[in-house]
Length: 113
Length: 113
Image (tube, rainbow over all chains, first blue to last red; front, side, top):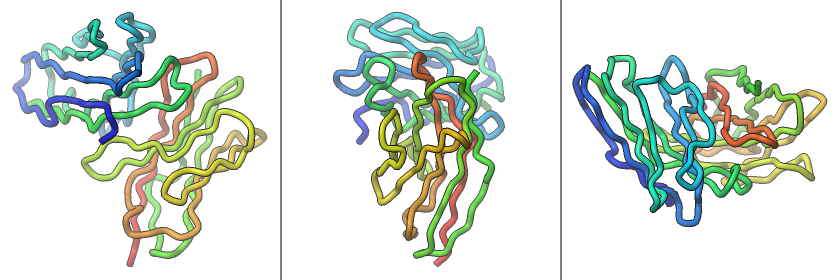
């Protein structure tokens, strides 16, 4: 157990739908990062939050959004889903700027049918 | 912009043989470098990291990596592989002033009995 908890582990949904992925960071970590892993794109950085505020943005589609709540858990919202959004979504957490490394959760596998 | 190249997509090695995985990075200043391992259906586990100091870094599971600034490389090695080392390995870089990790495409390691 890495200490980073992601739910659900698996999600199957239809095109056009909206889903929410949840991440609880490791105790003491204020930063949360979201990554998408797909066969064709590899591991792509989506977005980072630090203590509730957005800190960095990567290749995140406009249909996707995220937030970090006061208890530091984060949610990634994916809407108007397309087949190409099928991927493994990872959350990672760290102390500020990853000085002690980044701890990854076990991921949420999203399948869009 | 920072980038990471892992030239080998697949490597097959016999159990007990040595293993070396190549990683080349592109970054204009001092990089922070990481190696992660991903077993099938699992999240990413940190093997080792380099921030500064001794360029030969020891990690978990008997792995080590050497930072060579002149070659922009951070190759991962293990003297004697075990069947349980079969997995996908990812090299990643983070700039000293940055936050997010940028990953290479990964190298899948197969271990023959």
